[in-house]
Image (tube, rainbow, N blue to C red; front, top):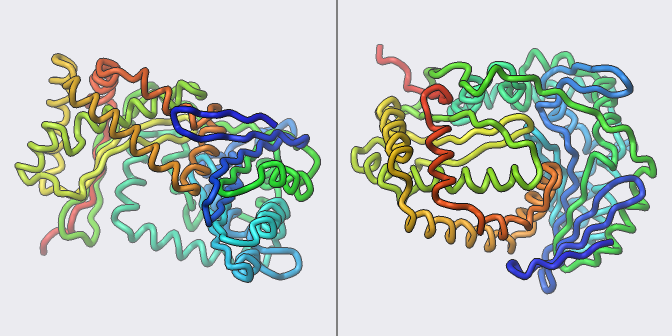
Length: 426
């Protein structure tokens, strides 16, 4: 066990490394009524091609998401969700491009719930009949996503930015791809990715870290397992695959998402630093305090639903902004103009300093939400760093660094504009 104190944050992090390779991170929150546990594997929708057992394997799109759905089934015919309900716990799960995670929140019976979490995630049980039934449920979910304008907006943006990277394929897969998934597919992927050395357990609350580590040691397999190696493919340079994509859907006003391909850092602290810098850079150029935001809002090109940010998955990184607009092409043109001006003149140093303080303050406040802290710690661990390093990393982020990033990234060749437009008037 190791314990690290973060004086800038007023936080402590206890780390336990079990004999089977599982890292256990415990963030004590004395006096908190609720406790939270987060059990995650470094396996997401992009891991469709991987090497395990000496050879390469390829799986249909959507296996990671399908597996997440089926993991709640238990060999005795019960369902983990029903067992959580008996103790009053609130469980959930999600699949992203780079991670699958299972978690719960409870105000009592934490140890009982933790044992259940560890047991059902590490005990696969599938039959061809249950897989066929789930296939129909997920197919309905996929069709709902296909009918959801905002989901289509973002998925089509990823498909425009990347020609080969599997991030361009929907996380849930397609109706055709999930039709190829069998019980055997799920067992193979669970064996390849759901072993302790490829996972992590995070917990936060008024908890005893040593006790949590001991429970994990009791409930999980003793073997480390052999790590699978994923291949997300290689992109051809840093240019966007396509620069414009558009689809007509039932919306009253055009929706747009403008994204920019960025070379992903190699991982570790450098990746976390780059992400913090990219978020600050986007806030500086299109955030509510920026001159460009004032112009776009003044010309009624955006409304208060306008948003911006960054998105990262294994092997990719992008910056983006999105919202409603009567003229998405005009928004794109003005953003290119502002990026060119920043390239010549730089960013407002005083504005950047205020934004940096505000961003640091927001992350500090977020530490009071155990569910967010556990998620971010797991994400950072899979990235190869410690999430709590963010406070010290902020100190090294300079205005000229953000300006250089914007000047090199917000250029036409790296960009794609995704638009969901209203149906044509008859």
